Amino acid sequence: MSRFLKKQYESLEPYTPGEQPKVDNLIKLNTNENPYGPSPRVLKAINQAQVSKLMLYPDPEAAELVSAIAEYYGLDRDQVMVGNGSDEVLAFSFMAFQNEESKFYFPEISYGFYKVYADIFQTRANPVPLTEDLRVNPEDYKNLDGTIIIANPNAPTGIALELEEIEGILESNRSNLVIIDEAYIDFGAKSCVPFLQKYDNLLIVQTFSKSRSLAGSRVGFALGSKALIEDLNRIKFSFNPYNLNRLSILAAKEAVRDDAYFQETRKKIINTRRSFTEKLEALGFTVLPSSANFVFAKSGQLSGKEYFTGLRKKNIIVRHFEKEPISDFVRITIGRDEDMEALLEATRELLERKAK
Figure (tube, rainbow, N blue to C red):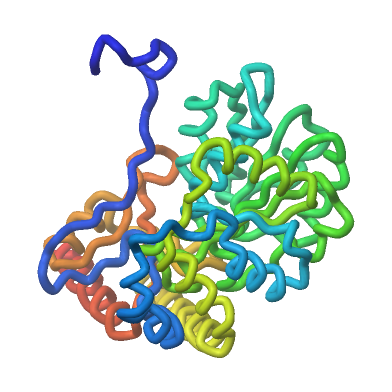
C-alpha cells in the first residue's frame, strides 16, 4: 500500500467477488447469475438508435425506470431510489445513516459486503451468529440499539425468514432503521413491500442482477418511506448523480415491464432447484432449504474443498467459503437443467472415486 492511504483503511479486508474465469466450455455456477438471458423486450430496446445516444448524459433521476418500479410495486415515485447495483444502494445507506457512534447488526454469516461497509464507513459492527442449523434467529434482532440489516433469503445459505418474523423485528425496533436486502426474494420468499405503509423504519433493497437477468447492467434499487428515499437521494446527488448509464436505465425499465418473461424464467429456476435438490439429497448430500436461485449443500463423503476442487477439474465452478462453520458446504447456482445434470454426473464420479 502507498504512504498516502488513510490509516483507517490499512487493515481493510475488501469484499471478494465470485470468480469470473475466462475458460471455454465452463459450466459457471458460482456467482448466482440467471441462466436465462434478459427479456426479449430488453434486447429489442437496446438498438443502434439508443447506442448512438451514448454521447449524451443519462437522466440523473432515471425517471422512467423509477416510475416503472413504483408502478410495479404499487408505490409512489418518491418511495423509489435507483443505484448502480444494490451494492451502491447499500453503500449510500451506510453513508446516510451510519457514523462512528452508530451500532450496526447483521448476521455473522451473510453477504460479505456488510462487514466491508461497516469497516469503510467506521460504524460499530455487531455480527450476530446464526443458529446451529445456519438460520437467522429473529429473536436475536429484537429490541436492539442500532441499525439492522438482514438478507432475506440469506446468503449463502438461501434460507428465508417468514414475513411475521420480519414484522416482529420491525415492531420491536421502531427507533432503529431495519434494512431488508431482498436480492433473492423472487425465487421463493415473500417481500416486505406490504410493510412499507406501516413501518417508516423499513428500507428494502433489491437488484436486477438475479431474477431480471441484468447482472451486467448493474442496476439496484431501494424502496422505503418518502423521507428515507429523500435521504438516499441526497447522498446520491452529492456523490454520483449520473450513477446509471442510459442503456442500463432502458434495460431495467423494459425488464420490469415484461412481467410474463420474469414469471416464466423465475419459475423455471424454482422448478430446477427443487428437482436438483432432490437428486443431490439422493446422493447423500445435506441441502439447506433454499428460497434463492442457489442451494447450499455439503457431502457426507467429500469436504467442501475437495468437492469444489473436484468439480473445477471437470470444468464446473461453484463457490466455496473457507471459514467455519460453513467450510464443508458449497454454494451452487441453479443453472439450466442440462447444467445441473452435468454437475450431478460429475458428483457421482467424484463420489465413486472417493469410495474406492
